Length: 147
Image (cartoon, rainbow, N blue to C red; front, top):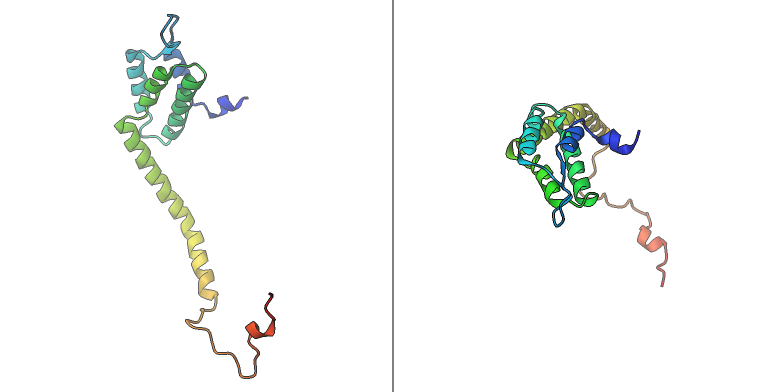
């Protein structure tokens, strides 16, 4: 299995099927028709409530990158990129990110409490250093300075 297959969500096949090859001189070699873009947008909107949206967005970004760099079709790449730069997708990503962050915080809560318990056992540092005992040689004078 190649790395492309490992990171690609099944939406990649839909994007590949929607891209139309153009064989006219002076035009980009590929384009995404508006009707196909609308159909893809509806398909992406089906993932708005699912955490799988992150995989969909990664795949769309990767497809856009390949269209621009490998196929030499920056307009088609921009059209594909616009599919995930829409307001509903961005809001859903933020919401899922907040939910994931809250879950991570809850999971880390026990570790955080363990750290607090550890710091409670550590002796408190004095606000100012204690004076040297009588007869002690200060370290600064115990070692000669290097010149």
